[in-house]
Image 1: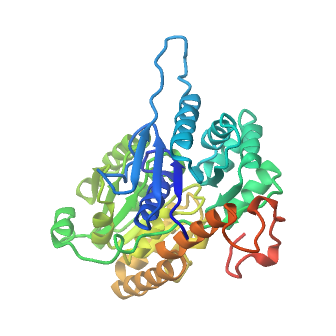
Image 2: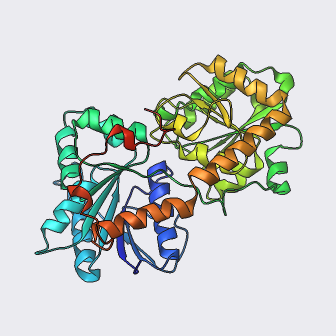
Length: 400
């Protein structure tokens, strides 16, 4: 397809939506598209200058009249300016609040604007904010005014329809993993620094929000037999980080827990580890689990949300009920005691990551969507005008 001018709006944090949006922008730029990233801070995975990518920092007025600075108005203004200056073909926003509304407002300020709006839902915009009466109707409005709505899992698609009573078309395009970055490799220096010469390394990466249930990782380790010689490696930061630290101290885990905080080269930490642990209360997809699988790690995670669409229970890892730390400890014990089982499950996870969630495959789906919206796929009507998909259109292995 011809090179496009694409705007991407996202949150800049280490959460899955910001990671996916930034990685998508970088991949599209590598394919020759012109990318404009919008956020209130530089996204975590946008390090330095990248050819074809321009970052637009959205600054908010500190005028004392405002108790809550109006970020949404500032974002809409910046979007409008770039849409005018660069004549964007597509404005792809990640997270409905406030990005979908901002995109709509920006477009409405431009007479005869032909920019297409794509809104990708990542989870809490539907599952939490959507259930709040303060946001439900405005989110529904944003979805209805988008030219295309994308969900990162079939589970999230179902949730969106139920929460918003939404009958419009939703295209499921999964998150992806860049297997040039996330791949099996043994960086002996990193592994040695993490204690891999003495311990089997169990990694947990998240933004330490309550939904990630990071304190459960300490509970899981508290149930493990110390003779297993396992160390918990915690990467990331957020509201629950201090709770985890305090819990590890009270449990007397000492050297069995290593805190890394926020780091940029997460792939090196993942690849240096042996097992990944994700006790989340809710996951619309489970990007960190996918990245672990791509690195050859078996995954122990909650059976919740979109995770069963990523991790195959008993094949590429083990899925347990949310909050059942004893069940997670039992699953982890099986993997720690059996290196051959770890190897088999790790290889199965790598195959699944490659076959179902590779970057080239998912990137082609996004480009096809853009081309369809712009009328560049002959014989296809505009995406928003098509009827909602029937159940038989779902992949056979999709989970409800």
